[in-house]
Amino acid sequence: MYDYIKGTYISKNESGSATMTVECGGIGYLLNVTGRTLSAFNLKDEVKVYVTLIHKEDSMSLCGFAAKEDRDIFNILQSVSGVGMKSSLVLLNEFTGCELINAVINEDYSLMSRAKGIGPKLAKKIIIELKDKLINLQNKAPIILEAQRPANIEESFLQETQAVLLSLGYTQDEIKKSVNHSLKNHECKTAEDVLKFSLQYLSSNY
Image (cartoon, rainbow, N blue to C red; front, side, top):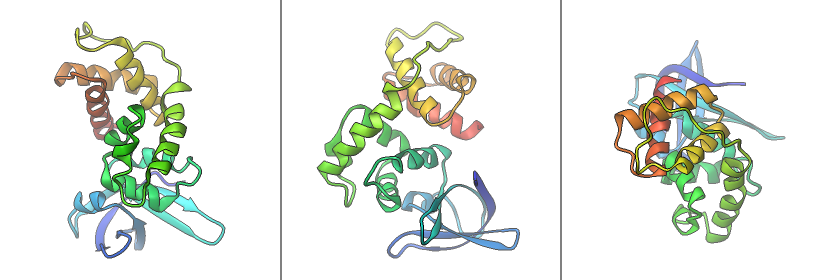
């Protein structure tokens, strides 16, 4: 229903659950956010916040994010049974979207359980359900590179990156451009590097 809201950052509340108000067209939108999102903006600035609507039987809430990939990862987290809005925001406050994805792929539940209120049992559940969504169910067609693949970058790294980005809703053409840009302009040593720089490129250009 909503992709983003662009307007003036009017106010914020950091006590308890973090919120910010963005005024657009004479309407003030109250957004549930993370501390990371609050720190990305300055009060009174014109901002662009990516949003998702949480619709429950007795309420509707908007959640806002400074980065598109964080919003998309938040939406995927919502598909895990037992993980609600608050838990998802806690995770994305503790970790960047890329860090969270890598924790899932590497099955690092001990790292994920560092987040407040996310115990080992819930962390394992998130990993089991999300790893399947992020990687195992995706088409792993090779990405066409514009230059020779660096010797240290395995084909599986590119397939893994493509699978994750497909899960986040990016097209094959967008993925091809982001991966080629990452390999050409950054020193990528691991699959995590390829994913991180590809997400940065996509967030800035799409």
